[in-house]
Image (cartoon, rainbow, N blue to C red; front, side):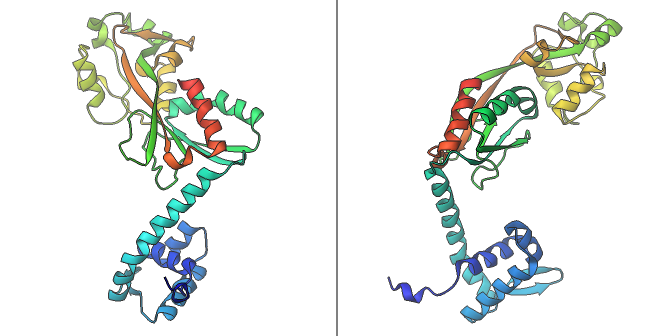
Length: 293
């Protein structure tokens, strides 16, 4: 290969690629952590270097020209290769310091992980943990997170997953709520209960009915997507809440209701395969396996 023939700057090619994906110089600058003038200059320099116009302005957006469309097919694999190089470099690091982004559900972040992170700060003060409380699946391929705790097993071949302890969930209500509506010991008592829902859909209703709990859609008047908000509503006496059994049992202000109902939620610890060789990520991973496993 004649390396002297490769004359263009990768930073310019990256600016072109991100601008094409984001649709404007300002959006590309935000994605790159740069400024709009810098990204614009890099793209202009690439156009001059290659002797081709890459973008045409259409309203407030930039659209690829014919020349840009031809070039993007070559630059996009370069971006993917650069991302793999970054992953491999991060995985090869032996330094026990640096950031680790960990994502898990709201309940796990609030009730399970705080003592884990507190202990890590004592044992490994060089590791800075960013905790992302989200019930949505985060994209580990694009490094939105380094390690994830998920309730589903990923299928992508680049991701490594380890099954850890399944989580038991049950129904709980505040003691004051039970005193007000009466005992909720058997499924036949369920008609007296108002149940907190996660959304306006019927998934929770359908799941309870399938489990033999005779509830109607009218018994789900309160909606809160955030699990911690829903738990606060439950503790305040707003209704019955489905919650991790260990969390509910540890709270003296609530009691388990309809005790025959219980669900088991699988739990997976996930990371990118190339990151498992990073010493700092391995430390966090092993600590999570110890606690969750």
